[in-house]
Image (cartoon, rainbow, N blue to C red):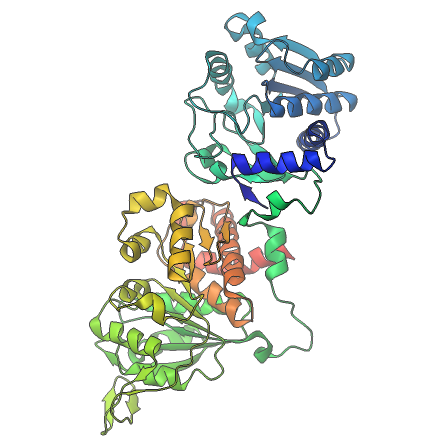
Length: 537
């Protein structure tokens, strides 16, 4: 689904009109789509009541057309018009079908509107559309204020956007009408996927207007909203004759004595998303804690210093990358200098050793003086403490392979950019896009409405804000999912989009199974991944 500004949507409509799909035809298709959605909520009963709040803009026409179609299907329909004289031809068609029409300026103190709302109709909100500017006029403000008195007992279907939302900025009027279902026409409007607007959207769906496929103005938009259809296409096929090599090998370099669970969650998630083999590269002391509960993994025990990865581990990891198709660095590392040096050596291709045998942790290593070897790195994902350590490496953006996936939450993004968390949260799409371009890497800016941004300008937003994911360890699960998808040969940007979607849906599934988002643990999210995949088919 495309994610557009108001100006971009106007350009798309104008081009469609110039190529033979008139504005009236677009309105008819939009109204019919709204009617079908409402019918889906009411079922086939002809006793259902539907009330539309109708403004003077195009979405008001959509609402009237929807009522006319519903009247044709036998439903009882009413239109409450904000402005006398607007949409005269559509009003005439509606009244011929038996629909009731009432105008705001004929309804003192919205008394009749209150009476209609007390009948608990399905409420179509087609009062204000994408072109509004705040503050609202007195008439629209009073209608919305009246409607919000009844929203707890109504099912509200918003046409294109909930009335009162600025569809570019996401700002909201005081009495913005919260929707249970928002039906966007052709594309999702940018402001809906930001706060505070998202709190009023409810379930989000898109009605296709069946516009021509070759609209330059639409193809120029490279912002997307992730949905099941697009993610389904990203997942690799699983042929019957496959073996574990078919689905790649992930190496997960993770964990320290204080963060054992991060390694486990990331590694198991890589398997859950379909990776053929997961190799865990962990500080030696973690092995005894993890091996018994993770028998599917193979193990590479790294030199350590007091339970954190030692710089000398770089050569051991490099020696074991031959069959690795995706490499995850960072979860649960800690921030020790020796681990920072390990990261720098991995990225630069340096391996460290000494002429004598040196036992550190569980691993004995032979080595010579430090040398610079020919560097080979598989596609990279860098997460958590790995991101913070990057900032202590000069020119880090240039030494990591192009299109590395970076997965910061807002706090880590603040460390990477030196911007405040508040500034990042206020401009999530712009910040993620700006730094993906500047750094030359894929940025997954985690949090409510996670943003995936690519250096070439592509952006995908996840339309999910779920407090069940606001829990330690869920980021490790996501990092493992991304790594596991890349390992299977999926391009890094697509893998990030797909993994973020599956992760978000697993959070929803986990919250439903556990019963409350506050009780969801990271392992519940990881264990819900199979169900999220099953729903994708």
